[in-house]
Length: 441
Length: 170
Image 1: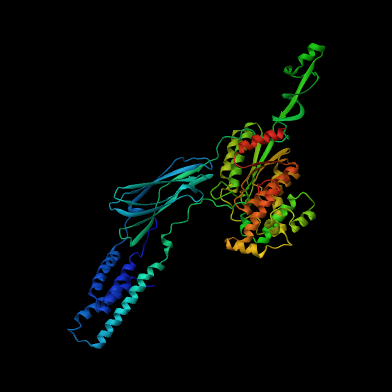
Image 2 (image 1 turned 90 degrees about the vertical axis):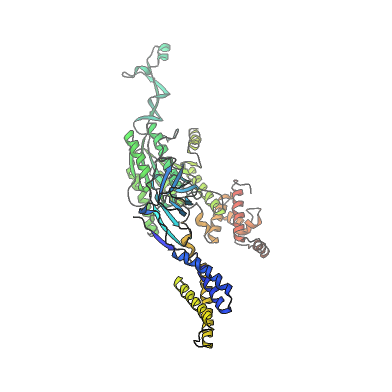
């Protein structure tokens, strides 16, 4: 049963006051005209106080609402058009109906307005539309808040009208075109060309034939020239083991403007694409996140379709990667030394879990020095780090510009230390292509 | 608070006054006293009526205001913490950036900043310098423009820094 609240608007109180004023003046100055005018005002005030609230909404089924979404399963960042139809199913006319639709708390209205006012005859309907920007996760619409009033407007009835509507925003299945990984490999065949000779595609060297060498690697040219048997070695290609670490600390929840996707959302979307692309290339990929207290976010490196499904589910729903920022930074309530120790330990817990020869891809906006410290701590442990950094800065105001410069300097410092940094503004695909060209050169 | 009930009582008093005034010449209920009573009632009615007519303006309007606009998840923009930071903190951070951007030893860079020799923009140079202060005339001009001199100087200092880093067109 929805809550129903009636309140008097007081719109006609002025008329009552005027009636008393005019009446008093009529008696005092003995002017009959004023007394007549007071009678008119008294009539209005009497009418306004006599009317009750209009029956609508709730269980008496005066108003019903229907919502249509242009897309129920959009990708993050997509705009979804919401069309709302409000219908008067009751027998009486509703001259003043005002609706505020119950947009889910995590969704921003990108276009139009979820507020609407109309006058509805019995059986009449009104429609309005607005657009919301999709954010990762499942979102349910709340009941619409409705206010109805009669022709006098003396009493308003506030209630809610409910209809179940939900939107499921999942990460797209498409991977990135090609993700450059560092030359650090596991002992499984794959796509990273190593300096050791063996089976592969790219020529490495020739050597004396040894019994047991595959027949398709015999150097027939040498045999024709000299009569000796030789074997061609190719650059051995092996798979990489990569762990994608997403920075989801409170400091990473930053965006260039209100309504824009924040850096954690962009990092998760990028991690999803890189995860798919690396698995497609035969690499072994795991996922970890650094963020709010509570559940541990860790998926050990692996391959295969089951692993792919597990990874995508983790990126979509894990609470540490929630689109909503934590209430406060995790270690704020600790003393500085203790907080620093806990921060180090948090990184070490991930480091200890890394299989040998694992490389890290760290997704972070790097808008604070602690993000750079995390990169250095991974790097110091011998796990080569590639930083993939969505740029959340803007130059609208001098202080935003200053923060952008500080971030650029932080990334430059990491580059100088030999850490690969991929800084992208809008297109991850273009940035990956540029990086692949630069890093292979 | 003057509610509907007070208003109805006042209206009833007015009605009684009107009735008495109409019957006045025919009934004798106290002569002069009756007249004074009627006048006082009418005056009281006018005060109550006037007050209640004005009263609705001071009614709490918030019940008619819809909830805030649906903005979704709100997160800050990098640098937003500086918007409310004290000026000396912002100055220190700009200064640090200038020291890093000047291609010389930190001590020399600090000296150049204090001497105002790091930029051609006099306002930006004065802003970061610990030896100089903005002139009164300049402050007055900023005041007349409706501008805060610190905001203006900060904008110019950041623009000069960007130029120094070879990023801007300032």
